[in-house]
Image (tube, rainbow, N blue to C red; front, side, top):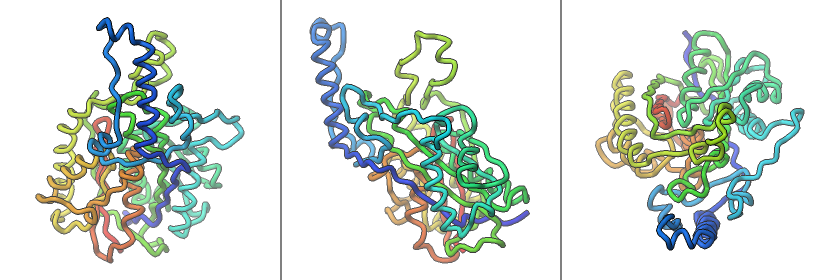
Length: 373
């Protein structure tokens, strides 16, 4: 069994930054237009009026101040409130593959690796833009990588589950190096007309190169000490969009075909689950929580991250110990914890230990314990 390291990471940030204020302006215009159009029903008590939102409410509820989107104009159009991403011909690189290739090239450059060094490609994210051919195979071809590729979907934990899969392949000699990519276009499955969730997500793509420790040549290398994964079924985060929708026309266009969640239940159930998961993982590896220098947590909600860190450490964690990127990127699903790692890891010293942790729909929880070499 070979030791495995993360030898390079990459990040693609979409071109359009959207502030809370911009999002609220579009949302509130939609609300006013909706209430005006249904004034008679509202006055008759047959319909509840929609409530407006505010930038202050969003930041207090989530810690989010802005997000990056693949398309801004469609989202901020009160008559549309959906990103406009035109379909491309089959012989052109797809949108998700384009994001993945950009992040992958950055990760491969950081790792000092070319396409000839990679044997396996995993695209792991919450939503694929098509069922087949696999996004990973398209990315593989675009980068000129031999070997094989496949897609994975474990919602917000897709990256940690993808890392575990890559670690297994490298450790057993199945692959010399693996490229694991997380192209998240979360704005495409977000209901921008829902006050409780319209602000949650942003778009981004991360990439990670994992390879044998004895072959790695990069300046920044992080040995994977262990991976731990867990899933528990829950309907509290759900998206019912799929190919069977056309088989029952009554459901087409309904809110459950986009992201829906019962936020209070998620908070109450997931936070202790993740905290206990990380503590058990560290205990198995004979590492005290106090010895962990950095926690790169899933960037879904600031209060959730603070509570999870407190459960693990027994005290409040500062932003050096548990970096926050969701104020700028919002929730980017599986990419969030990897963005935090990508942006807040180079300052670690040899021997420092850190934990990448994800949690989300499923429920799914993943943790990857690393040591800087």
